[in-house]
Length: 187
Ligand code: FES
Ligand code: FES
Image (cartoon, rainbow, N blue to C red; front, side):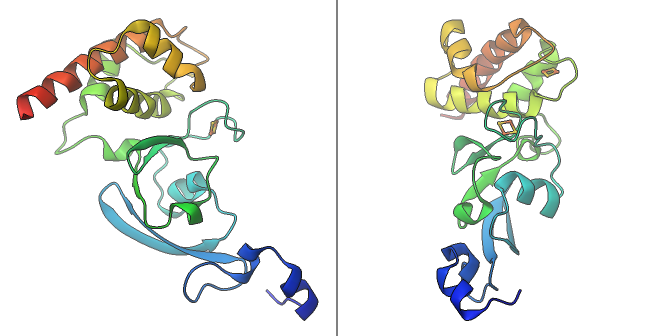
């Protein structure tokens, strides 16, 4: 894109390009996603959710609202649950990102995914990837014995239009306990 000198001088910093050799208005981003190194030059305004879905084709992360309300887009950034519609890909440069596709290992579902399946914690499934990523983060922070009241409080940022939450909470309690048992076995 061509900038007249005056516009370029007054344009926001992102317009000057971010990262070594980035063209004006673009940013070079490198991150580890689901254990793999990825990098790309993207529009500096690219959201993390767009980067994950459109550049990497990891479409398990959903977009429900685009306004930080629903939690369908939750991924983990450096181990913390993050609404990927609220952060720029460029601000995650150098981060480790895990999406729903990164939870299963060696063809085996993560204990939280297994618990959602066992306890029917979904109907249409649209909210499910974000719910599961949020749930894993809850257990990572609150432990395998996390109680129902805490789970309901922590799920405040995740909306489900189908289930009425009862089975989701039951699934998270079971998944928490399975994650706790897996950790104890590993210690
Ligand atoms: Fe990110 Fe709804 S799409 S919170
Ligand atoms: Fe349909 Fe949650 S299962 S929105």
